[in-house]
Length: 406
Image 1 (cartoon, one colour):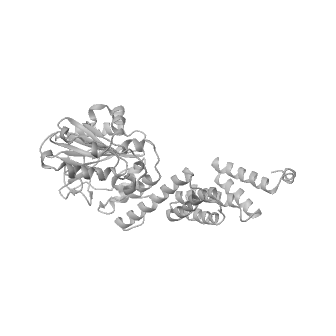
Image 2 (cartoon, rainbow, N blue to C red; image 1 turned 45 degrees about the vertical axis):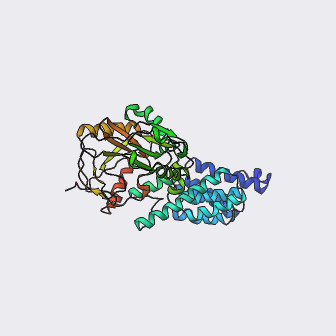
Image 3 (cartoon, rainbow, N blue to C red; image 1 turned 30 degrees about the horizontal axis):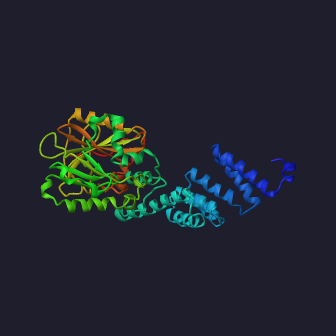
């Protein structure tokens, strides 16, 4: 900057121009140049907020989390108004320092309660705080969210930071049907027999003798009614009313469920292609590419639920989870290839998505698209599988160090 030009302007104008120049370097990808410019500004004015905060952003982009937190904490001491506090809270959020993010963003909300961006980031930080605590309580270790290594670390990062608006469509089990019809055609979608906005509106007498009743806005809110006559409609609908009474985000802390419409859905009870048990096939996709398959049968959460994990070529992996008793449930080569092809069509454009198929007497049907497998708290067995499966999230993945099941 020209010294004569500097002399013609106020110190505030000069400092602002220096900061704009540093920010332009940062936005152009010149981290070293931006860092040098910020350090020069701090030599002139040691307690300047803007360059201190920008140094935190530069370190974050470089993957230097510890150094970033040093700068962000220094900038926090200089943040006295809502805009500055919002910037610092956002920086803590992206550094996965959720406790500090929640504190600063709460201060920003108190100063500017109506600012939607502050509320949005505060919700994200609050979710990150709770989900990290849930992770640690179940898996007995702290998550590595800033530099994820394991499958669960990657999943947790995806849950906290993923903001693809299509996630809200696929988590809404009513809207999902239209999405799937457009992507894979109507024949692969589980039919919808009825839907209502309130449990009180359900016409129990009009329902078939067997059906599935579920809520549209959450996960696991589902009852299989094999014989309607064996159930008290008042009890069933009281449970459904309880589902609809609360936003599922309150339970899950998963962004895609926040503020979804709440409906009662009635689906037909699907029948198996062979035998007495309906076989589920879950195809795990990453970046729209199928990478692993799980087969299962039995009610979710029941002790009798069994299944196995497979490579795409059908070889069974030496892998289990705490909720699923391990057994061999192979599917034919033609069916496996068909489901992989369908899954990849359904999941184009998504960072990570699981396609949950049922193999029925009417052919394969997609029951759900699941973005948040296990909530990032899967108990893979043996324990080293968690880190090995973390490579599924990379483009050059391989599972060669996971042996085949004996």
